[in-house]
Image (cartoon, rainbow, N blue to C red; front, side, top):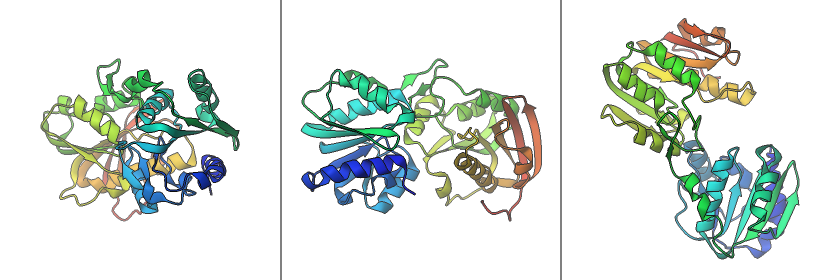
Length: 340
C-alpha cells in the first residue's frame, strides 16, 4: 500500500514529468525509496541516505545510491523528516547542489510540520506551486540565489550537553539516553573478551563498556545509520573498537560469536512496526552471542514483556526495573527459534 507521501508526490510529479524528462535528479531526507516509484528514469536519479537498509532498497529499485550529494542537479526532492534541524540542514545542503535555475520539490506530511516549515522559508523563497493533499503538502521552488547557507551548520557534528559528538539525524542527539545509562550500570565490570554493540548509535554504550571493563579485547559496533557511525568514530578513541556500517538483517560472514552483546534497541513506541523491529533486535542478538555468553539489553517498560524474551532465551534475569525502563541479562539462546 502506498504511503500518503508517495501518493501526494505521484500526483504532483505527474503534472511536472512531461517537462522534466531526462533531467538529473536527487532525493534527500527520505528513508522510503518506494515513495518515488513514479519516477521513470531512475538511472538518472540519485537516492541519498545515511541508512544502509534504505540504500539497498533504492539500489534494488534501480536508483543510483550514495550517502552524499556529489554533483549539481536539475531537480532535488526533499522529503521532510521528523527533525526540524535536520530539515534545515538538508535544505541548505540541497540548495548548494542545485543548479542555478534548478527546481526544488519539498514534500512533507502534516505530522512532521510541513506547513510551518514552508512558512518558515516563504519569507526568503516564494513557492511557484503548493499542493495540499493526502494530509500534507508538496511545493515547488526555483533556485535564484543562495539563501540558506547559514543553515549548513546543522549538517555538522556538534558536542551535546554530555560532551559527545552528535547530529540531529540520529537517536537521542542532545543528551545520553537515560535507558542507556541504566544499562551501563548493569554491565559495569561484567564484560570481557569479544563484545558486540548492536545498533550502536553515536557510541555511548561502547565507550562506556571499554571504560568500565578492562577485560574486553574488542568491541564491534554495528550501526545502520552512517551519520551515527561517523559520530561514534569521533567519540571513541580506542584501538579495541571496530566500526561496521551494516543493516541488522545483513550482519553475516562473522568468524566468531561474541562473549557479550550490548544493546539499547532504538524503537520505543508500541506501534506494531516498531515492535517487529524490536523483536528483530532480540532475535539477532540471540544469533550473535555464543552459548556461554550474555546479552545485555534495556527496554522501555510496557513496550516489550519479559515473557516475550523467554521465546528467544532460556535464562532471563532482570537487573533493574522502574516505571520507565527495565534492564536485563539474557543467556542460553534458543537455537531453533525463527524470527517472526
